[in-house]
Image (cartoon, rainbow, N blue to C red; front, side, top):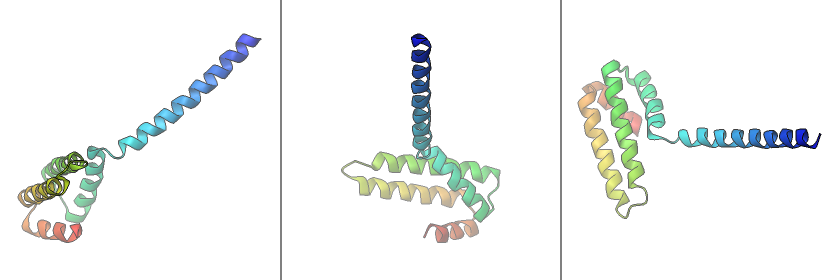
Length: 110
């Protein structure tokens, strides 16, 4: 009888621990550059009317931008790194988007 109680108590504790670990993983995943870039790409696609090739290119540019911003955090020259990442994003977007889409994107950014 004592063994059954110990087994039930142990499984209950393990079950609670798994739920906590799963919730922490989901929370951490929301801050990954790919997740943020995917959401922003979907929003931009609706706002600017992007086609498939543009969506893929915008997604890649946004992932690169977000990763650059994350790398810049904690560095001594963080402001310069962030400015470079922002300039690279603007240059990429100018190549990807049409003139009309680019102007609209600039207004959305502000």
